[in-house]
Image 1: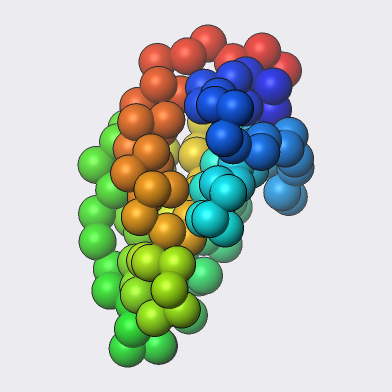
Image 2: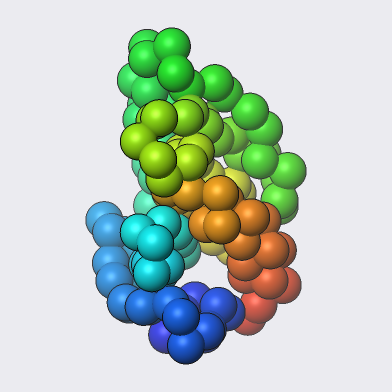
Length: 130
């Protein structure tokens, strides 16, 4: 699955690394300017993954720099977004419940944020191989 996720965004400018996080498999992309986007597909333990991601979102909201917003890809899903004022732009984390899997993600930077919904929509229509 990680290779399928990585193949959704390819560019000579980007470094892509297949990786795992908990029960998820996915990809992390890094731009030359330090921006990062990571996305993980969780087929097993979906409800537990959603619960844990909601806890991360709730903890993030204790920092006034973060705001909660809906993530309208697939069904259900939330994300937090904040400006770290570190010169790399906005950052955040979240999840969405797709048919057959939960997608979790995090990003840092405006370019990464721009690609997030595009890749999530592509993933929602992909048949994933375990």
